[in-house]
Each structure stands twice: as C-alpha cells, then as structure tokens.
Image (cartoon, rainbow, N blue to C red; front, side, top):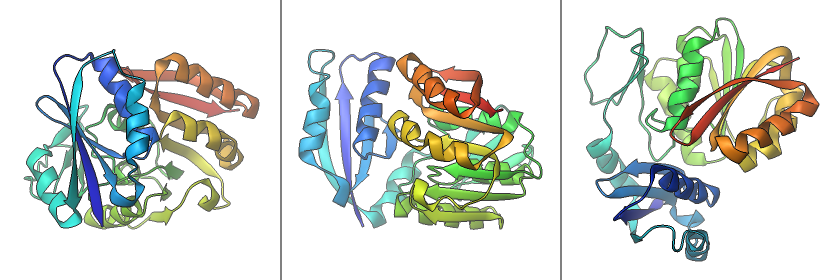
Length: 279
C-alpha cells in the first residue's frame, strides 16, 4: 500500500488554528499527524486521497493564516523509516511508558506499552490519546468488558488490558489500523483483545462496562445510539477527538436521551476528552 504525505509549513499560526486544520483533515480521511519544525505532516492512504477534497477543506482557512504545503507519495516500506526518525518515548502521568521496539526498556514504570504504528493513529503523543490514557489510568478496569472504537494502534485497549480488563474488543474501519491493533497486542503479549475491521455495524451484540471512543465529533454523534445500546447500566463511556466549543455540548445533547450523563472532561490545547456514565 502507498500513502500520501501532505506537509504544511507556517510563518505564524496559533495552536488552536493548527488544531482546527488537523481536525478538518481528519474529517476527509487523514489519520496520522506528525509535528515538524515549521508545522506538521498529515498522512492518508493513497486510495483515500482526493485533491479536490483537500483543496475544499483548505478554502475555509484562507485569510486566517499563511501556509504552504507539499504533497508526496510514500511507499509503505518507507513508513517505518519515517516514524522511527520522529517517534520519541512517551511517559503518561509518570506511570505509563510508551515506546517503540527500538527504544530501551524502562522497568521503573508500572505499565510499559510497545507500539509499532504502521500508519495507524495512536502512539499516545496526540493530545486526545494522552487524555484517554489518563482516564484509563484513573479508572478501575479490573475484570471489566471493554469496547475500544476507532482503536488505531490499540494503545488504549492494550493499556486497559495491562490494568486487568477481562476482555476487550478493538474496532477500526481502516484495515491498516486493524492489522496494527493485532500486531501491537501480540507485541505486548496481550491475548484478550479481539480486533475487528469495520464501524458500528461490526460491534458484537454484547454488554460492555466501559466504552472508549476516540474518533471525531461527527462519527461519535452518528454512533452514540449504538454505544448506548451496548453499554451496561452504570457503565462508563469516554469520548475524545473533538473540541470544547461547540462540540462538547453537542456530545452531551446526543447522549442525554439515552441516559448517558456527563461527569467531567479534560482539556489539552483545544482538544477535549469527556467522561459519561449511563444511568
């Protein structure tokens, strides 16, 4: 498989403006983002790339900030070389250490996760993933049945498994993510994660104690009724992939008819993660 890399550079841009641009790119299929010295790079698989969609998405930012971008084709075999240059180990709350296979082991941390992204979103470096991991670290998951939607690398499911979750289902509609989830579970010697490729239609007919959904606002709004149907009474659902205003209120409004009540939220930059509980 080939990928498209779009690299943006800016002379001056506010953090919230860059976050808005990233969110817009995610809406049209870009699923991996890397910071660069002067901006960031966004990646999408070759078959999903549409030049007109990119141009149309950028139109709304005309006049807000100056930017340049380049489009490059990347062969799949070159991807590992690219991310190895930029993937630094990550420490979450001084408790969880996220590393690649080529980084040294750090046994002083309670939880260690080994991740091989392979173009899949979710190394913990993005604010949304970081906040979701913080929520998992704060939550009692021992013996729980957990659903991880939009799992990417399966980093969230892997952390929950290491904390003692009983069984987990990790779902992503991108085949690369699906394969990455399976490989990363094996890398971490996790045997109780079932990875599935698809969307809400492949969610097994079961009941879950916890649902993790780090996707984007529009997909979350579409899938909330299905989440509600499989979340146990008293169960918790954690959302991320959106902004505080106006997205958080939209998520609250969509959850309310199903008895999924807002508890609290975290915020890093403009990104938000929120915790809800089903009555």
